[in-house]
Length: 120
Image 1 (cartoon, one colour):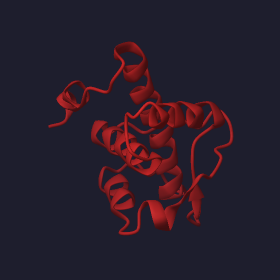
Image 2 (tube, one colour; image 1 turned 120 degrees about the vertical axis):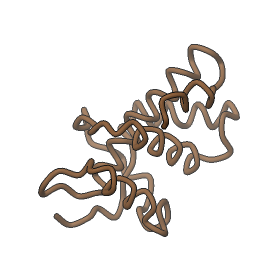
Image 3 (spheres, rainbow, N blue to C red; image 1 turned 60 degrees about the vertical axis):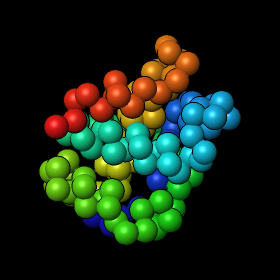
């Protein structure tokens, strides 16, 4: 399966990401997106399909220049047959950003201590 050159978020989730950036939760959308992906990778769950088309806001070679996210997804066996690795990264980002946003909306911040409690 050919790898996508751009990945992103659905529009509603993109709006959540941008709101958190605007409110100072992170300095930029790249870092927050990569944190969201990393947290989801650590849970080891295969992400569900996207509910709608993602916007392609990130170029994969800029977001993951050393292919660290790609390697982590593959090492956690989250890629199914005939599936592009960065498509899995995109879906992990979607789920992860939603979780970060839920945490932000419920507490006014993102508690890494609470989010990292499940990581071995």
